[in-house]
Length: 129
Image (cartoon, rainbow, N blue to C red; front, side):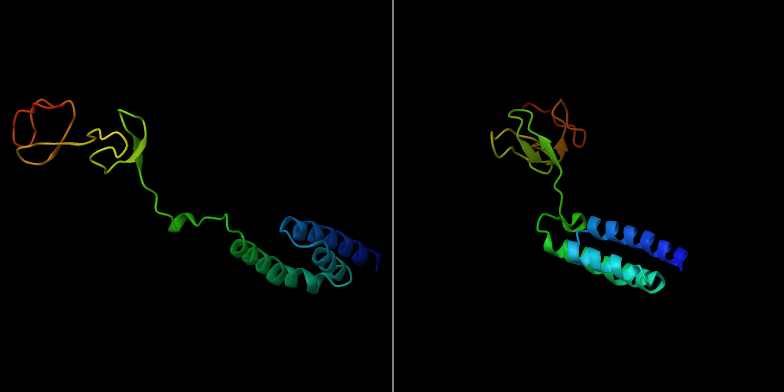
């Protein structure tokens, strides 16, 4: 009788602390802990199946600051070389200072490097920077 009561108290202590860490109220945590003292073999599996899962789901649905990373579209940004504002990498012109971000060959229309003197695709002379 003494050993089973000691085991029940130890289990109650761990269940109470776990419930408090999960954000359960004082009364709910205390109820799970007290119930586990006389019947730890029955209450512990019930707590693990019912007590933990429902609270985690409620907390996830109730917190408006939680952002689902998988559903968030992340745009790659780069600083504009002229003004330093963050712009998307796909932009041709900076929307803040109107600086040309990606140069296009006037002859063939392909993107070219800013330092290029000749278009690598059509060999046209590049006369603008």
